[in-house]
Image (cartoon, rainbow, N blue to C red; front, side, top):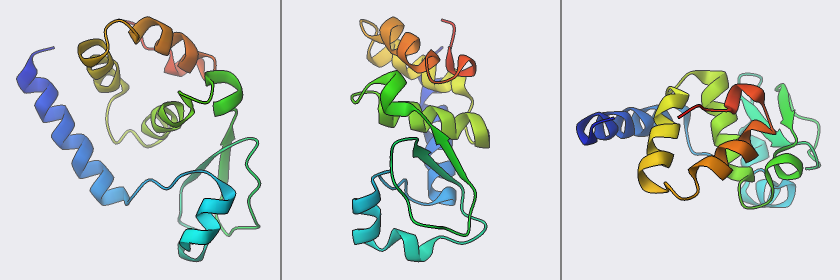
Length: 125
């Protein structure tokens, strides 16, 4: 993928994140302390690690074993990939292209770790 295309994809990703709002850390204590729970509505899309304890919230919660299957270092990336997959805000191919370009030595191992969360996150080079 050409550098110009990666730049365009990055711009689309920034626009999608601005539209969706900030990504909050999926840690029960941090979310409560930051006031994030107070901003949750029935229209909120929430992805959380399966092990994180959350209070009763008015929105559906998509739980995934991010830490268990992808490991602590890649749990956040697995959550971002799952969010991309569920919202189609950006094609997963864009994530794989950035991974291949910026972190070629780690790309294969990262794909393998993410595929343990979801086969749809496998990302073929």
